[in-house]
Structure formats: structure tokens, C-alpha cells
Amino acid sequence: MTFVTLESRFKQFMASLSGVEPIDALLPPGSFENKHRADYLWADRRVVMELKTLKVDPSAKVEAELSQHQDRNDFPLIYGTVELPKILRHLPDGDQINQRIYRNISRSVETAVRSAETQISDTEEIFSLLKPVGLLVLLNESIDVLDPQVVVRRTSELLTRERTDGSRYTSIDFVWLLFESHATQAPDGSMARPSILLEGPTACKFDWFIPAFNWLQTSWSAFNNTPLRHASIEKIADISFRSAKPDNPIPPDRQTRQEQWERRYQMTPYLRSLSDDKVLEHGTQLVQLLTPYFLKDGPRVPMERLEPLFVKWSNFLQESRHRGLNLRHLQNKLQL
Picture (cartoon, rainbow, N blue to C red):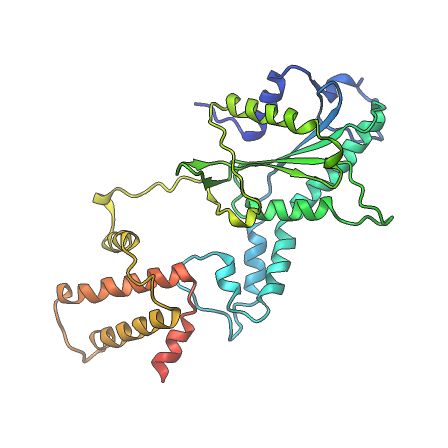
């Protein structure tokens, strides 16, 4: 089976719609070379549409920023791979670090929005259009770090920013965000890919556009042969997103003993109800119980007898990773 990218599929979708005019096909070669044109005219030229795809993965910028702080005495020691906020909450300047990371990873979003503003504005001039709707369609197929919350926040900031002339004018009235990089749980329990419409400062002037967009979104859903589910959530911060990449679970007969322990703990996370301090105390007690068996002259017992302690230690590490606990506190408790 040939893989078709999200961008290619969206272009195929646009080609299947009536009333859509690809702008490149409308202009003679070499014309308006000093202008930046958008991609489509739609709805009797009442909509100018520009298509952008987020293609560059900025994950390395996160690692580069964190590497500057890892030698600090107050940098947390955390088991496993955890979300960035769970690391930064331990640092007194975590908010400032997070803001730098946010700006660095969202530069591609800024580039897309600023470029689309020029393309839509220039297209209005090329075709002498009387203030059509400016629609930016922004696609994210696979970049995990650019989750919907990051992209929505940065796009909203850019649409409402004050310009150098003091105005808040933007040629983009709406932004349609399509994510196949992430998924969220629908009310019926199934996983859904986000389709989000952002309204710019001038969107209120185009009430007629919302029914047209609803038709467009429904058509996109039908084109992909996927159901369309609507969510009535006011703040995107209230929605939990996860990477849409498949988990590829390991079959039970191929799981290591450690993986089996972790799976059982996921089903019954008995430490979840404890406070962070209580969980750390529990970990301290386990280290104290296990340490003698690793000393040169310590007692020697069959591994089968120690397995219950190893299971508890594995459960502790798994819970500490879930919470993002700073295991330096565990070191401190052991040194007391």
C-alpha cells in the first residue's frame, strides 16, 4: 500500500470539491512575480485559502535548552522519560525556561502564520477581491512536540498581536488546524484526531462562513471515511492529548519480567493515593531493605525470595515516573 501524506491527501480533497479554484492554475506563468499568492479561492471567491504543513521537528531545541541546566545542583533526578512540565516544576526558574522552549519550538508556527498573512493579503490585491475571508489551513501530521495546545496558543497570540503601526489587523480571519500527530478521547471513549477552528479578531464580520466551514469539515471527514464528533469544550487546556503514534504493545509471551510487573501495576496502581512524601518514604524503605543484599559481605538468598521486593521497587520507580518525582530527595533521605 502506498503511503499518502496528510498534505497530499488534503490537496486531493480540495481537488474533489466543486467551487474550488487553485490559484496557480488561474495566473499566467511569470505574472505577479512580486506578489506572494495563496493556494485556493473558494465559495465564489469569498474565501482565500492558504495551506501550510508543519514539517520540521523542533524536539532537539528542547534537549538543547535542558542540557544547559543539567549540571545544576537543583536540576531534578527523575527516573525514565517524563513530560517537560514534570521536570521544570522542580526548578525555581522553570517558568522562564519553559517560555524559552515554547518560543523556540513554535517558530515554525510563527513562520507559517506570518507567511500566510502576506499570501492572503497579496491574493486579495491580485484578484481585486473585496475583503474575502482569509482562511489558513495548518496541518500537523507527525510532530509530537507541536501538540494542539502549543499550536493553538501560538497561533492565537500571532493573530491578536499588535502590529508596528499600532493596529491589530490581520488578513487571516480563521485558522483550521488539522492534527494527525495527536489524538484525544471522544465522549464515547474512542480516540479522535483534533480538527480545530480558530477565530481571529475579525471573524465576527463573517457569520456566513461558519455554516460553510461546517460543510467543509463534514466533507473532509467523509473524504477520509472517518466519523466526525463535536466537542463542547471552552478551553483547549481542558483537553488531554497524546501522540497518535501506535503503541505497538509487546505480546505477553515476549514481555520481560520487568514489563510484566509494570503492566500489573498499571492495572492496580496502589501507590497512586499516597502523597509525594509518602511515596518517597516508601522508596527509601525499599532501598534500605534491598541494600544489604548487594553488599560484598551481605546475606545471600535465592532470587525468588527477593522478587517481591524487586516488584515493589519496580512499582515505586513506575509511580515516581508517573508523578515526575525528584529522586534527589530520595538520596537526601538515605543520607540522613
